[in-house]
View (cartoon, helix red, strand yellow):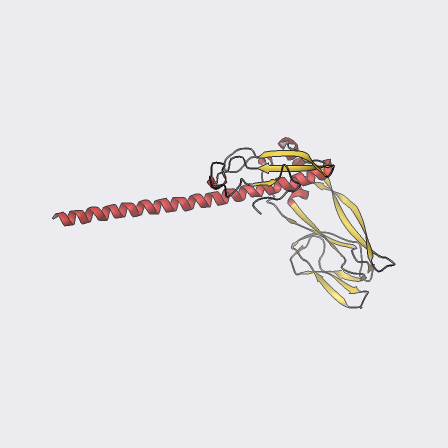
Amino acid sequence: MNVTKIVSIVLLLVAIALAGYLWNSISTTIKEQESIKVTEAQITAKLAVIREAEKVFREQHGRYTSNWDSLINFIQTAQVPITVRTETIIPLSYGRDSIRVQIDTLGFVPAKDRIFKKTTTINSADDGTFLGFGAKVGDQVFKGGKSYSLRRESNGRVEDFAFLEKGTISDLAKVNPGDKVTKGQYLITLWDWQFDPNMDISQLNIVPGSGKEFGIYTGKIDRNGLLVDVIHVWDPAPINPNRRPSNEARNRQPLQFGSKTDVNTSGNWE
């Protein structure tokens, strides 16, 4: 075997080794990116639940809580009221309308149901004669399906109104075909899951991936002489290198919602 063949074989082996190294490196990078994407989705899912739980906790106690045991216990054991908002339109003498809002309590539900389920109420779109519902309690309905029928008082026209969201009917108003209804009168309540109901609430404070505890801050700030509540919850140890303080570019912040200095509960993943 001459020198040329030997060199060719060596170069071929080196090329194969480099190609294998590059393929393995690219494959590893892709797998890492996919893993980060999946983990960050799990983190944002928990942050969204924490945010909703804090909102419901504040409705009941008049404040947010930075105590994880208190928040988790609230989700697991508390009962909270379920309410319906009814608007009554009152025409005024000078051509404008006044709106009277009435909030009624239908009963109480577990805090977890209130947090994990999205509840939607449907009110009458206009004054008129009610002609019937398009579904009954317990039915699963879909966007675009018939919710109720109404003969408008203004022009006598019969109109079928559609559901704007999917869900399960949990309550119908006690109205019968032929009854008069007014604009804003309560008619239907439906619900749908907005979060995974199988989430382990006992581990709500633990960040997926790192096993660390979410950072949490609650307090009050002055806004024009009025003290208002603020909350900030964040991932203290991002698995994504682009979200770490050591990243010189600082083009991304740790996954978080809320603020210590501003009145908002926005999440930076939205």
